[in-house]
Length: 234
Image (cartoon, rainbow, N blue to C red; front, side, top):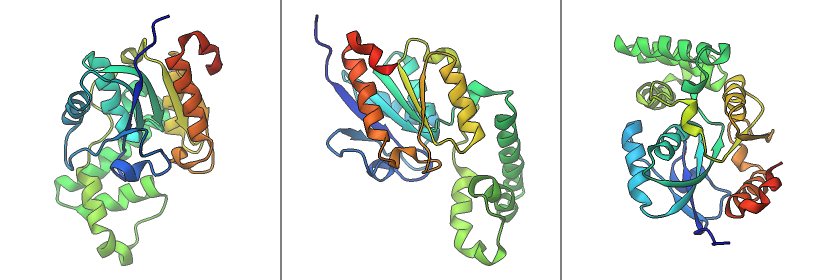
């Protein structure tokens, strides 16, 4: 049997930490750690991924909103993607209509409407409880103003044309933290279309920081590089 080319691991950050800092427990020698340009839109990020790894066979690891450019790049046919490891993937477009998804989108839309009136504090009063579980605190506003401005202008993870059919034929491992209905709903949609799903509890939105993450990914990677042993994913 002809040996497949070696996989290049690619690690894609979410909306928070960037580059190597977003994957502190992953081997720095394992592959490339993407750091998108601040303020870049999703399509720019897709092009960054495609242009950064010409000719390489890649295993994309993507966290949260990083799953959006990862799936779009994989579906483009311009990047040789052997598989996707999607960690708490914010693929809201594939689960539209589900209550948890629509609730989140509605609240963020309401919050962003405040910024149209240049009411950044009003945005934060709505957005902060949704994302961080704590009510707005006027005494903390000065310290949190910069974070509020960043979140008010960051990419939202819907409206980018991601469709579940884009994942057809791509081997996918979904890892969630078992704490949030939105990510579990999205994982359920992906599982219904052939993805494997594991839950690693204890780190909420960052299950990649838990000890069980690396072994699960290694098992997944071995199955990709040795197709005759795909039963390892069962």
